Amino acid sequence: MYEQRNGQVSTFSASFNPIFLWELTPKILFDSRLEIEPSGGGTNVNLVNAQISYLLNDYVVLGVGEFFSPSNVFVERFEPQWINRLPDRPIGVYHGVLPNISVGAQVRGGFPIGPTRVDYAFYVSNGPTLSTFDARTAGTLDFNSYTDNNDNKAVGGRVGFLPVPGVEVGYGFETSKPGFQGTAFADVQALVQSVDLEVTRNSDLLKGRINLFAQYAWSHVDHAVYDPDGSLGFGPLPLTAKRDGGYAEIAYRPTKLDIDLLRNLELIFRWDHLSPDPSGLGDPSETRWTLGLDYWLSPSTVVKAAYEWDKPNGERNRNALFFQTAIGF
Amino acid sequence: MIRMLSRSLLAAFLMLFISTSLNLFADPKAKQRTATEPSDTVSSDSYMGLTGEELWSNNCLRCHNIRPPTMYGNAQWDMIVHHMRLRANITGQEQRAIVEFLKSSK
Image 1 (cartoon, each protein chain N blue to C red):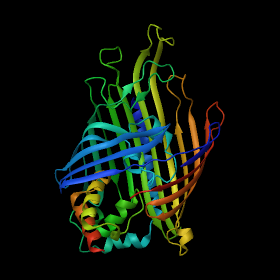
Image 2: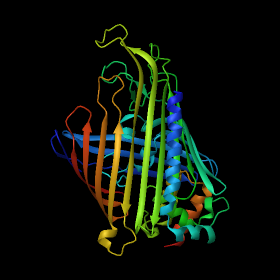
Image 3: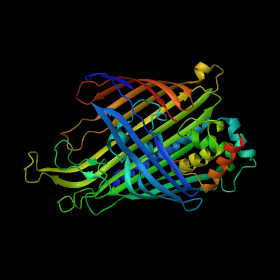
Image 4: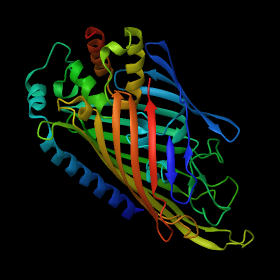
């Protein structure tokens, strides 16, 4: 990927994300993904997920390990670069309010209700860590800490409803106690919630396919006093920490035109937003508008170009130009 | 907390309204086909009575472009659809109908 962002040096980047699938029996599957990318003078290798799942019956699947958090539909379904239609990811649901990866156990599945379908996923996991030591991030939830900081386990999930084929509405949540055990923050409760919508429609009228994705999330951390004795230099800071963010994306591909060149093009428009850090001392709110144009060389090979209007509140713009090629195989 | 829950529910209802409205853009032929032409691969609990082909198209296209059945061998399709069952939360019968379609279409 090539990224040229206002105020930063332009740069190329690359990554290789192999997926390992091992079906031990028709009921047992091991799946894992690595993320390998150059960094500085070396190479970073990260374990993205590693899960063993068991098909209990037609409607229930059990899983244990490190998995994409079911409460965040974007990371479960749309995050891979050959699926995500834009070169970067929405800030609200990918860098902010919701968990991306969970370590624990889950139960999931789907079942029909008359002509409609419901799908579900519930899990227990180590949960997030509450940031308490830094004025800028006080009250935020760190979802990238995969080892637990207390005996409490986060409980979360998502329920989706498909009223007709190609349309899904979902609600996700995760509740936890993110404070370190033995500290004044041990009993502070956190709740994150998310609603999402996915629509895929082939239209004769529009001579093509429309995909609409939208997701909005809220996080709430109960009232607490950060740096109560002032020893960290920013307290006492009483705070009920709230954050929210999300995105809406619409994509159009003229799949019903006869001209190959046009049929392989896809036009994408996205709005995404993340509220300021709850302490008011960290990052400001950020709203971005992104326009992208993709050319699909095969069903899973795409060349993307996009321009992003990015204006953090009170700061100079961080508008960016992207070019990216992605392949899934 | 209650206000946040209320906003979540309001947003969910709004999204449901939008999704229902977007059905105006649906392909009328596809709608007619799903309602009147159940095929051999229809499973008794497959929602909307969709065929294996329709399940393959509808479920895969929700997230990404569909790959042609000839792209992978039978054993690979078994494993790939097993994996996708975990992501898309399709039922076991839908999984079998999709695999059956993919294997029979090559």
